[in-house]
Image 1: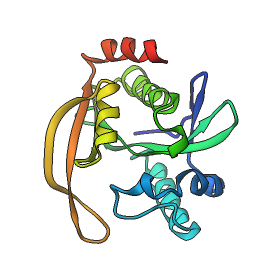
Image 2 (image 1 turned 30 degrees about the vertical axis):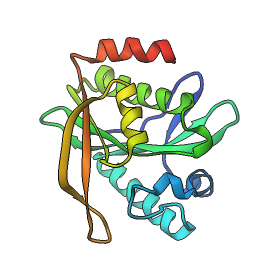
Image 3 (image 1 turned 90 degrees about the vertical axis):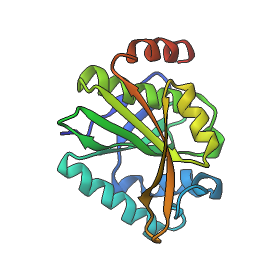
Image 4 (image 1 turned 135 degrees about the horizontal axis):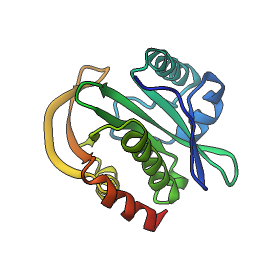
Length: 192
């Protein structure tokens, strides 16, 4: 079971998502390029964003996921969002996903710090053995970012995720396992 918890580094804070984050969430994510590999722009309007945030809050109440707002601590600005979800307690596996980072903050410290905090929590606090990170097969920027943090490419899952509009996507699947975590951690700390 996952608990809503705040995770912090020197530069960012991952804070559990609430409705109070709605305006800042929309400001951080209302850029077409953020959503180009997803079927819908979750920040296109307040109604869509509110529904998505409320769905995340409802799932957090069940312990099946934790949705985070990413806050840059230097200016206390919301710069994105990420989640731990698809919890498999029996196999000690969880997925990191639903991640977006505002364009001005992409290729900065934000993704490295966010992934480090999540991985550290999953492996060192929860004692899980596997983290999966998936992205649209055509999202090369995300695929490169996942590989840079230490994700091992496992392959393309064909037509495995159905979108709200009924279409399917092929997914590039990456993972990091507990045996790899010490080296992944050391590599991330050199860029931290």
